[in-house]
Length: 108
Length: 475
Image (cartoon, rainbow over all chains, first blue to last red; front, side, top):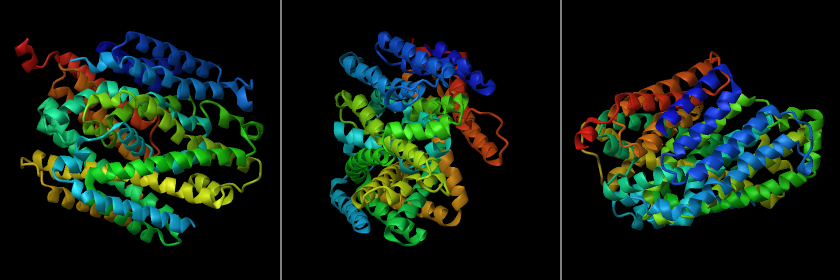
């Protein structure tokens, strides 16, 4: 996990310096997941979070200018950003923390 | 009504400070609130120390300028609480409960056995704390001056006096109890302000139609800032939150890890509610200005005050100002506690002296801290803003690798800590100076680059050196 974290952080740094957006997205999401993986007791939670966030961020990169309107007359990418990055992750890690709490708190 | 509400609120905070005096018997009471935090107090204290006045004033202002892209600063609030619990709660709780640590530099010394790292971290923290505290005092002065119809300097003095009374007399005990009230007030204010802001702009559909008709890029997910800057903000605030001493310090105040069972999701929801003010006021004021119903703002940071003055009923204006004052003071009181700990214990120790542990010394250093921050606020206003802006990035770059990685990687020795501390600090300060001078060439925020450099350095040096000598000897 430490090597994965190092590679992901390096990817994010290179992506940020050269404005390579896809590398930046993958580096950022993988770094966050690999860092959390140092102590998170569930690989499932890490995997679900990685897939969800990577997919949402890549969609936002490619479809940022999609003019289709969605709920409340807001553009679809704006709604997806608010639901996908701001709200939905509560159901993955914070609720996942509750779900795996006994395993985590009982760990030596 | 509004001045009366604010004066009554300030009097209540002062009374809590006076009441808390008798609940401080040892230095662990003063610095760690006696390690008696429950779930609700832990959530509200953490939320109110993260959500500073910037979320209420700077956030809507940033939305006014940059659009939805500014919101990447707060979107990670939905999961950082879980990261904090998994990565930091157990080691910080153990350090406080079993090794007598009272401050973050104490933890660094206990973990790495390195006086240089502990002293360097303490010095960096002191710089950041003084800058942050002076910035909060200035912000408080501006708000109190507007509400109480007085000068900014009188506002600063009134705010500083109330803060000094309750933090110096009551230490972290008073800070936690006032955080409870301040957190509840902030949540109530944001929910009502959001509702009135959206209704005032004619509802979400009308607000959206006006913005899309005049300036559609404001509602693009990356706003006017672009993906590279926004992704940089996202990473910086998601991961850099793990290095904020005034926030993670709260995890050392827990009596038991079981308190944390529901902590991440309640914290996430309370922070999501709190950030509604950013979204609601920012988009509403932008829509009203674009639609010609409000005059363009002289300064983006006037978004929230313009909304409260022109669109909110009097009771909401009072509640809104109380929310802003609460957000500012609750962050400032956490900084006072952290800064007093650094002055009283960590700097002494890094100079080879015995750290002070008496309550009286802690109080004297709290007053000294206020004195320095006030002097800075009064004399070097430009520098205050600079050091305040630098604060988050400096804490993130200097402390995140040592805490988030180092506390969960037993093989990491003192060298990765020493080198990443220096690299992170130099990169954070250097990047911000280049940015201020207009010579920073990249789109990714300089603080994010500093954080990435320090994390990469910590891992590369740690993995390159392999096991610690003492670890290798024992295996």
